[in-house]
Length: 533
Image (cartoon, rainbow, N blue to C red; front, side, top):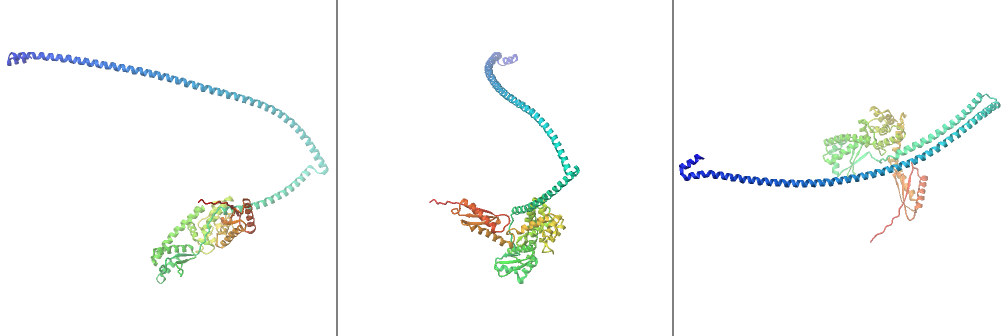
């Protein structure tokens, strides 16, 4: 500072020196004033913060007081709730204790009554025991007296008959033995008669139930198949130039093709139903394709034959599944499929085999035999008919040899060979198959030869019902097992309907020959019709 003033004095003289001396003083005074002002601001800020802190403290005290007041109120409320809950629980407990006391009092009364009853029973029991003891003594005395009397009578009888005790015993035993033998003979005869009657009735009921539980189709087939042809031009293409197409077709299929003057029809004739079916399908394909020549014919016939083999196997599997027969050889399954295209007196042989299998199973179950084995015998009993066009001998012999060769059980082989009586029955399933085969072949409408008689019987049933006065219409349903009669409601009353049903049933019994029973149902209906215009 002094150096700075000396420099100013040297440079500018006394004025500059005075200025140089007053400048530090001024600066010191400014600094002091600034410090004083800063101290005032600090004190003011400190006072403001102190006031704010006191306000916060006051608010905190107020909040604390409010919280304490609320806590006090909540505590008082909880105490009141606890007291009320305690009083309720105490009242419930008191009531429950009173209820228990009442129940205990009732039980005590009941126990007292039971004790009285037991005491009474015990007293009566003692009295009964005393009476029984007295009666026992009396019985013993009487028994002793009776033994004495019997001994006296025995001695008297021996004296009169002049027999020893052993001789008398032997005589009584001989008489008893003769009586027992006579009664035993009568009993055996009565049992045998009853058993025979029951056996016939049981067999009849078993067969009737087996028939009624099976619903089969009526089938009629022919040995000639017809195919529709659109025009005579197509017939010419089937014949071919100089007959080469028809000769190639007959050679490939083994059937006879009949092309005559019948319009729109070509016939196929063959004793083998499978070959006939292959030829029919092949010819239909050729007609649809339009390309008919020897090479194409051979290809189509070969392709159809392969498809037919697969189809036969599927048909056999389906038949075995329907008859619930498992574990058949593949050869037998294919032969079953061939029976689908085989007919006997108009009856489809495969459906007949399935029907026989079902009936055999039902009868075997009723007789406590093996139902699965019976169904197997029934399904395979006509398997020889699938090969009788190719092998010599009856279908029973062919089928039995085939099944024996393929490892079928002896019961199955015997059932196939003996269901027509060709060989003796060595298993119980053979007569079952024979009976089921006869039932299936003779039921109404199954074969062409009995269809006319079946229809005639239905017409006869309807004619009998229509012959009565007041009958409007009559229908024979359920293969002739039921006749439904519709009467005129104005001419036949409700009570008269009952008498009419009885009269019709009685006349059917007198005039018609039928198996089982026929149900007669008389229907009387009143209809009121009016039109609103």
